[in-house]
Length: 121
Image 1 (cartoon, rainbow, N blue to C red):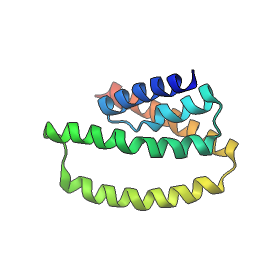
Image 2 (cartoon, rainbow, N blue to C red):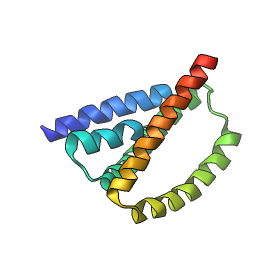
Image 3 (cartoon, rainbow, N blue to C red):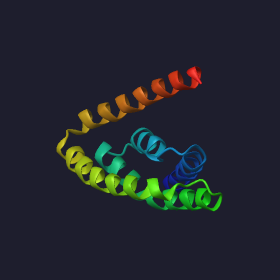
Image 4 (spheres, rainbow, N blue to C red):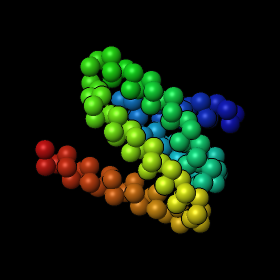
């Protein structure tokens, strides 16, 4: 039953992340922690590994439609690699509970910010 649960979560996360341009971690991490009782560090690491093929396929689909500005993508991608290294070091140094709270705070902050921006537009 667990493999079916992972497949369902992956399908939902892949669809939502490609359709909305969000990282699948918004779905993967809470799903792994809440539904499958996975440690926060493991959930975040797994989410980062899983998002690679999802991001490649989503980017490919948007590139085919002419919706990728490559001159922005290259420096953003390079900086993202450096930031990923730094963020990984930070995450690994944090307690599981603190990391979970920080992740939840980031999700709530992002949700409120997006709601505010969508009402202004």
